[in-house]
Length: 251
Image 1 (cartoon, rainbow, N blue to C red):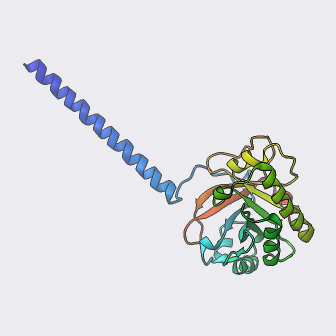
Image 2 (tube, rainbow, N blue to C red):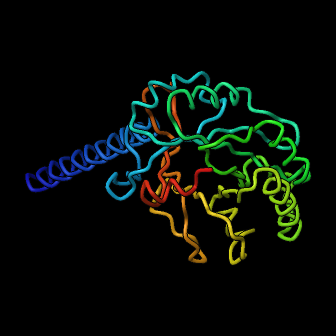
Image 3 (cartoon, rainbow, N blue to C red):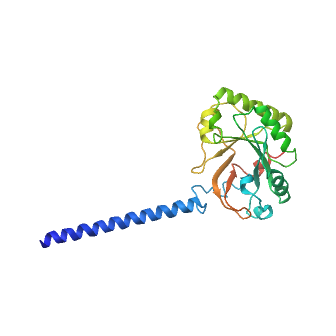
């Protein structure tokens, strides 16, 4: 009987330890999830020595931005949303474009490309919105599936509309655009295509590696960053090169 009681006590003790260990693991996982969600810690943290040229991208989602305060974060550039589709204009673009320049940041504008409108019409929307100014980054075409899943095009149709957009943009600005892509979009539409455009890739987990070995130029490494001057989250980016190489992208 005494032996059975000892076994029972030993079993209960082990059971309590396992429950405590499980509770600790769950608590640790919950804390980590909270820290990631709040943007306090993140998966990627590119070194400043390797990627000295750093920036952000914004839209109306960041609401009113304190640009002089943003500049104090040791940032060099900002991409800002200008347009989407054939008729939408970002409500914060004009203010952001003017105030970021006044704060001393290098600016670039991007267009969210939609599958439901023609490439030429979308390009005209962008041209109506984004002025030609010196010391700016090339126009950016934001290419992703989000918001486009209902209108998915086959590869040939997408490339036709994209090329129409690029033709109008290049003719107007006399510059080659940048292509912002997710891995999913790149794999489906652009992999192994001979498009002579610099790539801006989103990868919040690892250092980017495009599936066809094409080099990348900009890297969006965090989509829940926090910086002074912006309430809430903001996307963080780096340029893949030196300050001198970055300067070659400016008009």
